[in-house]
Image (cartoon, rainbow, N blue to C red; front, side, top):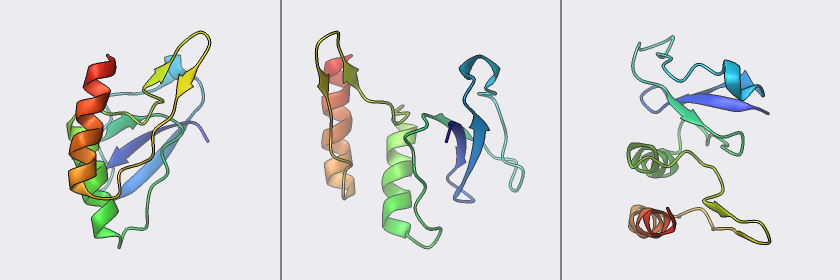
Length: 100
């Protein structure tokens, strides 16, 4: 559990702990030296061999989604189902942008 850094090139997720203030958002991948993406503790990496899910994750990360619940107000939360394909991911990002 805790915040994570994700490398879509190497398909790894590194847990960084639960203290948000100490989290390193500018980390590079220890394997490929590429960019790692800051994600919420709700992120669960698929198997490295799951090309379909990694493509969806890459699209979501490049679109700025960090796997937090997109809307949680004082009296209600709106939860969303994870996209199952790139077409659903595109629609998901359009909906997230409306909520901001």
